[in-house]
Length: 186
Image 1 (cartoon, helix red, strand yellow):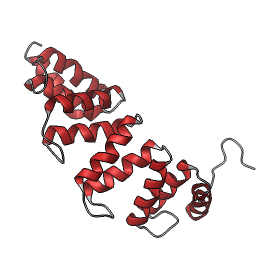
Image 2 (cartoon, rainbow, N blue to C red; image 1 turned 60 degrees about the horizontal axis):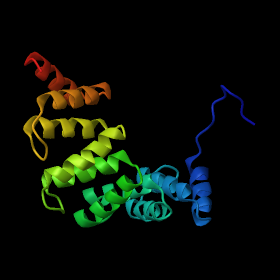
Image 3 (cartoon, rainbow, N blue to C red; image 1 turned 90 degrees about the vertical axis):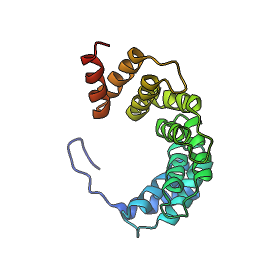
């Protein structure tokens, strides 16, 4: 038995065994955690391909982080062939499940025209979801859209508010942009 203040020895191999058992029993969080261990080579041999398979199982069971990680791996070609369309599908699923990082990445895809037609209005929708979910980069990028008037009515005051919010979340680009707008009198 462990008590408060005692250090718990990290045994990743044992954790992998237990997460596999949980995953095999239909527990999505177990699949996700096993995917993480495979992704990072902790307690098991690093295997990105297997990590993707376990992330998919997690996603299929409703785990938003699993959906995000599958999308991220397809987006970056990590362990599997890069495929932006599949990445978009999983990132959207993550976003729909409340994962702010998934919303941010979908916003970037619309902003840059990756696997979808470039559409600043849709980028705005996803950046807003990301920002509202606590993603600082989402707040910053939404601020950039307002600053430039892309997909939204240009509003430097609105941009300043978003840059400030990003800065409050430790986004240095947001802090810099906020300071610049402040110096310009906005």
